[in-house]
Image (cartoon, rainbow, N blue to C red; front, top):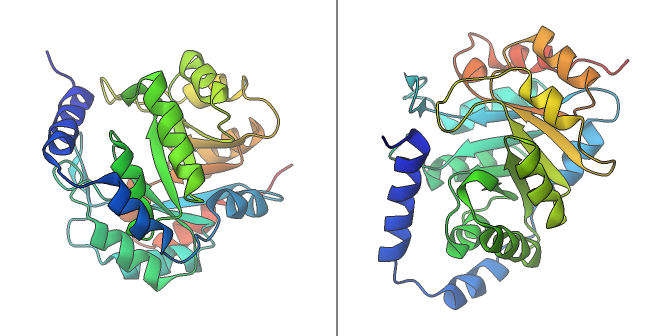
Length: 262
């Protein structure tokens, strides 16, 4: 039986196979873009005294359905900035998450924060297009890529001055991320096969990360208690979507997650 991840990746790979765009042309366009804002640098600076917050613009999810289908990306991004978010994450996957490149552009234009393109990167042109649409960082999911793809996509991101958030789910994937020199690593507490959340996953996997790696915890983070546990476990940042886009006061919800280091 196909999992959510299987179906999502199959669709993205089919779209990539049908795409006749030449990467050389896209690279020329990407290199002409203004310089990125520095995603990893912003997280590092924000995490010195407190847990940094990556606030996500997210309309829906495969497991929960509609969360905030009518959201205004610029308005939401502005609220996150008022709450003290260090960076943004914007879903650009349309079929499964209701996102778009326009959502990313609108959110980024509204604030000065660096922005991650949150999508399922399966082709080198996906990395280049992230730069073209204005992203400052790209997501590379270890579970979705083989070793060669992970190496190649990470290298392309570096050539374009894009930071790469390498997402892992267990110690084996972490070893693969570290092997390519990843210094910005996210631990997704949501199992991409079952979509269930394991709130112990980040603490367990994060303990194996060496110094020099910016540690990001993803999924299942709902409030100060979760944030406190993660900052005490050595995480620099949390990436939070569902609880923020559904909050009555997103700015205050972001501020609540910025717990100080002890």
